[in-house]
Length: 149
Image 1 (cartoon, rainbow, N blue to C red):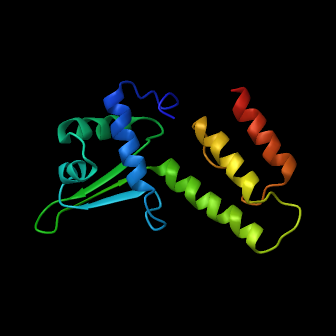
Image 2: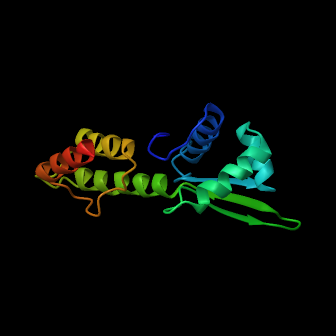
């Protein structure tokens, strides 16, 4: 994943991994990390250097498409929220795709194939498919296209 986003250096990759881990730490996280206080206090909560984390967030947010989105409010009730948009999109897609399985709809990919599609496309930095109900042929095509790039 770090290669896909061009994240160089062990420290940068470590900060990215800690952010993504926190953004996926619970079913309700959905790709978001929130902290009461500043972004610097969020960095402390993640166990990373605050200055370097702030620089990384600015760099990651300036990319096209951005790999993070950050909002910070100041004042007595200061708060900081960081989103990893690709993670949010994938978590929602997997939930939608699994809902097709659990509704008992026939002919569509099952939970194992959903995982395979997600793992393959995420490893190549691809967004989730637009369609949540994939046929096996569609899943094969997506995996083949992602693997050949």
